[in-house]
Length: 315
Image (cartoon, rainbow, N blue to C red; front, side):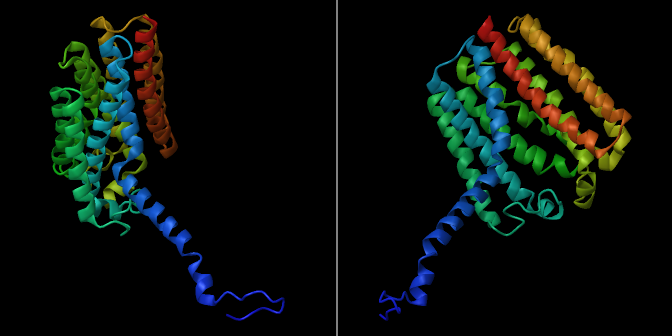
């Protein structure tokens, strides 16, 4: 070891280089973890979990046991994450073409496709096992059904075959509230099915609003979304039609006696806002209007289910 002019030891170049290796390894590990989390689409899982928990509050007529809520969120989240990982595996070719998705881990080459396949299968099985062990058999079966519909019916079949893909494929996204209801009660009734209908009818205008913004992407990937096949004008009319139909459907839980006046007022106000956004989109057909309608649809659904939980707590 040599010394400096001041008498201190000189660190060899190789040793100096090695001092940064732990930092590099940690950064790489964090990047790998984040890429795997991205396969699961955590923001989507969060919205699905929120609708399931709010529905559980309605089913229990108050806050259910915290353990049951945690088990339902964990099992449902694993199942939804597995479905999203499988979706990433199936749609890797489409994602590589679309500007919105080409930086995802698989098309960008950061994660091999086979790993996403194994991750999806493992998480789906894990979610089913958690729900079966700590909630009810019906909740577990419904969660598995949502995965199968999303992967096989929507992703593998309808998405590339028909502009009505999201109308039927939306069943998968409407099942989580049923999972929450079944976790609490072990059965389904008219109120549960009315909540299912709300998300089923909400899904098309939600996705079509985004599809208007991303029409060129979908056209490039040859995905027959409604704006690509029928045009923007037709899509905007369908969005308005669905939002108008959605408003009375959101009042079905009131008709079954599960919801009260507070929820009814919230549903009408939120619904009026959604219809207004759809009318604005019809009159001002711009990408910005489509994006605003899409973003409002997210706030709308969260607000509607929050109103369900609050109404139950107040009553």
